[in-house]
Image (cartoon, rainbow, N blue to C red; front, top):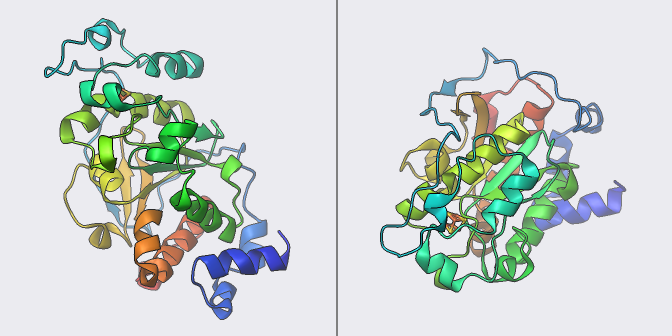
Length: 272
Ligand code: SF4
């Protein structure tokens, strides 16, 4: 990336230029290609917070508030391949209210062999319209955040907790998140990323099965699922647009993402 573009992305992140020196050009250049997937080795220097193990060996539960039966008839998804998964999710009728209001399901996008999986909340109006996650203003900021650490959107995989837009952009309900979880679990299993970045409260709470505030979930490396995939939590780009003063914190989280992808030593004290 040329220096002018890099300065632009850093400016979007609200990072003074002198801060950009905290990531050396060398640390970016040595990042392995995204299709090189060495096994993730536990790093004894990184304190790990144990989380609940979950698998995708689940049938989508039926929404008991509706008369839809399609979800109940759907086969277990744990063994679906990518194409079957992407096709079947478009037919999912498990959440009556969401099915009634959605234009389409929003499955996910990006590199299916990515080292980094980014998980957000749910589609908004623009995502529902375009069928792709993170395409509105928040999506543009997420793209700039990635570019600030020399990652292109196409190199990572981006998905949401929910595949369908909640009406009026309300928070996903607990039941909706539980119904939609098997789709995401199967995506995670198929991608088998080195690292998950949970953006925002809804993603963090549903992945880590906790109600702890995002600000307190930051600055730790959590663990997800049977594969013990490391998880970092950061602020949602929508929140950063409303609270630009938090951008320097998100920038620190991104630096830690880069370090973990490079399997560099992470010093938690540097993360605060
Ligand atoms: S949100 Fe998920 S579980 Fe609910 S209808 Fe959409 S795809 Fe199905």
